[in-house]
Amino acid sequence: MRVLVIASEPASPELLRSVARDLPDDAEVLVVAPASTDSPLRFWVSDADDAIAHADRTQTETVERFEEAGIDASGEVGDSEPLVAIADALTTFPADRVVVLGHERDARDYREDDLAGQVRERFGLPVDVGTVER
Image 1 (cartoon, rainbow, N blue to C red):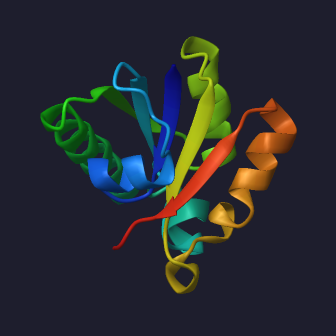
Image 2 (cartoon, rainbow, N blue to C red):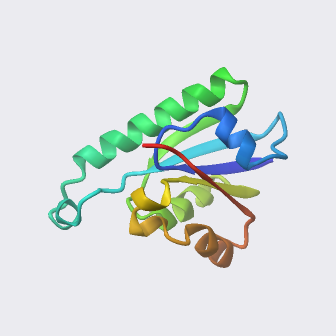
């Protein structure tokens, strides 16, 4: 089974396993961290350096945690728009399911609103959703 994990913050293997309860031991996981800016001004002036650095730390730390727990994982930084990041990843990693690990509702970016529903509609894949802390 191939699982695409979209992570907005570093995530633990325990969170992944609690969200994707039937995750097989031999699952192949790709962690994609969208390089989302937290400020509309930064987005409009194309100041994405901080967002890219945060996304790189997020995917690196998440992959390391997953690997330490015995999960076969790799990672990459994705587009600032999570739906575009998912579409890009699916071109080279044909996932069987998507796991969205987003922020809590009060810390959520507008791009995270109904991301699971958009993924189901656009790609026809099963989606599991969990919450990571900032």
